[in-house]
Length: 358
Image (tube, rainbow, N blue to C red; front, side, top):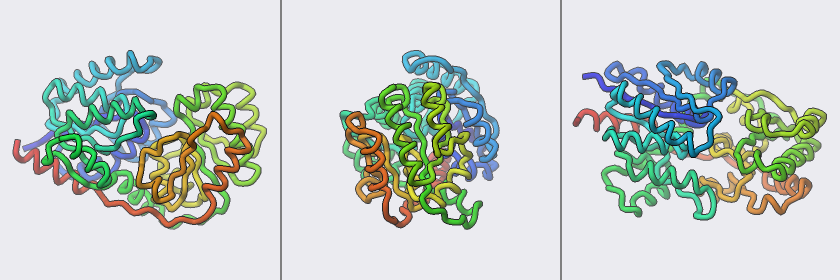
């Protein structure tokens, strides 16, 4: 009997999490799998190279570009609904905490199609990350399976009364992705005083004051360390002419978005990361690199408690020199690579056992 699995994604980090699962399932001739990309963050430069690098096939795209979340979410629900009706999957994978995850969970639940939520049980503080927090809770409470990265995440879904038979402590798909790519790359020569920077979140990029502070800080950092800035399309679009000129005239190395293999290669030769991303600090920790995260909730509590992630609690009150000093202080010193659990085979075994009972 052949089963169909649909992966629903909408952002670059979700493709990275999908990579190990896709690779493992692709060798199973009893399963047909497809990808539906909602188009939430679609950018040709950021998506095409990643898709080619990972060898993804059978991708369908939604078109929701240019709309805010109040229009994107209902459009995504409708588009995903139509994909579910036409493809008729036996099972769906949803990843993380994006609006695509929320839309997928609602469409699947209404059509009574079982899905597994990857990174289930992650909870942010009440005063921050409210949008992602809502998305995660809805996705968790409608899911057939909760695939948790850490014991803390597992306890969260258990404490919220979700059925115990649905809760699974499996480890981190990003850990699997990191090690698959690391094995492909082999040894990478160490480079001292290199900081990898990614900035893309709306609260940092759309706010003129914050964006200006961050750019000035990067310029200051580049006087002391090599600073590499793969320029996210959102930052490119929002930055003023003067800000882009400042970056261009500084020692900051502004480049196009990196392939995943190049991210890992850069991390293996880096001494620190400055970012507002959720995924990059994980890859950095697995490479033994500390991160300064430009938000006041670390999301990944264990990495924060063990010194891999350092948050900025009052960004609006800082100056470029003080933020530069904070980054240099927090990134100073070595730290061993963080160890998680390889999760792909556990997830595949759980889903295949479930499908065998249907």
